[in-house]
Image (cartoon, rainbow, N blue to C red):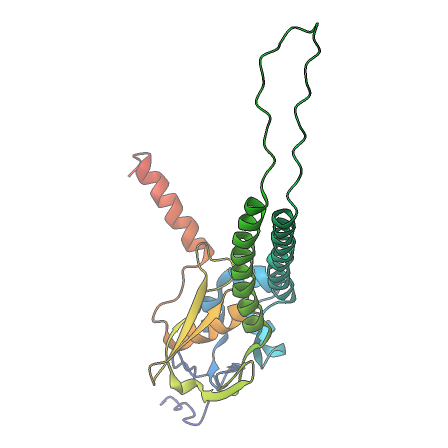
Amino acid sequence: MSETPSNPTAARCARCARDLSGELPVRLPDARSYCAACCDRMATEQFELETGEPFTKWIEKHPRLEMRHTPMEIALRRVLFFAPLVAAVLSLLLAGYGVYRIANPPEVAPPVPALPDTPRQPRQPRPQPASGWSFLGLGLVSVAAFSYFSLRQLRGYLRAAGFSLTLENGRFTLRHGAHEEAFGIEDVTQSCVVRPGTVGALEGALGLKDGRMLTLDTCLTDLHALGVVMDLRFREDFPPSQEEQWQERRDKLRKIRGLE
């Protein structure tokens, strides 16, 4: 008895090319369908620890990925902008006090004459009060330094507050302040999405086919899910599972202890 050929019109996994006629395909925001096994292996246990549910269940509720800076990150950048700004204002007041001291120098009290019957004591040098020029110089230097830090944090705050990157049906939409741009996921030729919690990582990037590079901060929302989607498209191997990591650690321990 000959085998019945598979349905050529049935959906196939975009990664492993497995026939998905007997299971429900997982439709991702990159407009491709994958099998649940490939999605779970690429997401591993880290995604479930972050979101509280497996990737396949989470992505069903989020057909549209939206990468924005978290409210806590926005509040932190706002504080980092206002703190040096307040310090710069206080430094300006210090410089103003120095100008006042220069215009109105303090009067030096005359030395008190010693009484005739009092034995002479050796003269002790009196501490000289700080001059107005010292206050003025310190204030101006502080104003310049704190103003520089405040302007840097202002640029970072405005960049974070106006940044938005969405992915839906294989289409990216980028908003950066007044700038808005849309491009397809086929225009992305390279991907290095740094997942949250990566030690020593500051940012990731998406490389476009026209040579441009879009940087992504690690504090963006839905960044882990975007990393899974892009890894399914570009990554050749699957990340090691928790059991494989434990087995690798056990093998290293056995080698160190001389058991192998």
